[in-house]
Length: 380
Image (cartoon, rainbow, N blue to C red; front, side, top):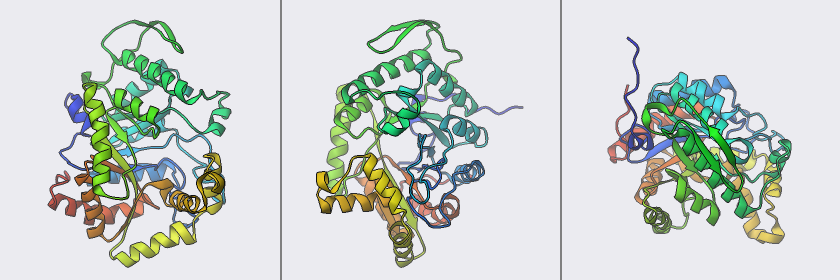
């Protein structure tokens, strides 16, 4: 008899089908070098075989989700950082077909894809994974990538006005309605139809990571998960930031979870972790790629000041600016517990080599989080 996943509810989709109070995902594994701008030989290759091995391993040990990066063009440097990437919807579909429990996201640049087409792409992946697909919406910032498509980016305000229409059409396509019309400022659809609907009568989890005020407002209106930087100064500062975002969502009658991103280097001792991190992210950083990223973002000593510029440069070398979680298993578990205490629902992490580093992390860190009541015991 063929087994099918139980009919998903929006609540269990949003919780990634688990009882974990603090959820953990892997971020950027569809890209060469992942999110570590490094020259080290063992850096992540981002091939399909590596992704498939990692997804099966992550599924087995109880990792909650896989989040890919929508990247069309590398950043150059000695490694052509993120120069080879797997398109995220095909990547997600293949991984969902090969796993049982883990949620896999697709990442889409809304200005580059018609929302009717995007709705169909999402639903196809969602049926393959029987309700385990999630959507990460990106409104776009990288001018060089948009030039590849012959698409001109809108000014910042209109970028999010367009994105609002885009997600409205997407949700209409996923709704029970057979046919619909849509007349907006940017989008016009007549007698639109999209079947089948998402798996089991509830829609995919939607996430966004906009950093501007407009981006945050877009997420609050439309998304189930919002990824933001945790404040480095204190737990209290992060608590305040998260409380403010959640309060904004509640004013709209919405409940939204807040996540962050991080870079994990976990080794048996603090010294081993710190030494390796210094080796990979300082001594052997691909500084030419870092400088390319800084230039694309328009970050210079003139507009930041020299000290702030050097700080940002170091942060980009360290996993593109995610929270650094570097230490032995006790320290890593403690850092995750502090994030949970601050109200962060979960974290998407990168590693220099995901497949080589995940087993030790799973064996040592996850049980410590179980003892703290932040993770349920992984299913065998």
